[in-house]
Length: 214
Image (cartoon, rainbow, N blue to C red):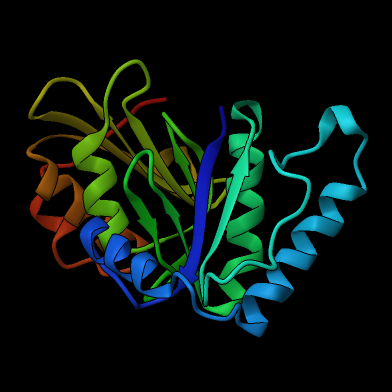
């Protein structure tokens, strides 16, 4: 069995239903030059590896009538590697990455370049408001945490303690600037994280932060 990711242009869909409709509409359409270039790049990188380490579940990508869409099947043990590679290739081309298994649409529209560590899915090179809201809402055991980092000593993170209770921490340069708060509700947590990411200090001041003595 393979794990699929799908490349599609940024902005053409915002929900799984809209993604499915777009993919259906692209069937039978001539492959675009952008998709052909992405397929060629992925095929070349895959061919550079020893057979035991290849990350595609097919002999080659591209050449099909899929319009501006590219499906990328991979072995399960290559999911993290493939997702990271696709994001780094697709983002500069203004393409989104869709994960149909999780129904995650990772679209660079309005993104902020930061390092995001998702406890259940690994690292991502940017964050958007939509992803913040979805990821915080869906955090689940065994690793219900999310970390957003600008630099080694500048980050915000949350850990989901129960269905509606979260611990949120942020660090702004050193141990004397490390604060924590107990927050109720995923929407409030998502707002705090997104405001910190876009460096808006308006709403975070409403939370009763306590300095941590680390």
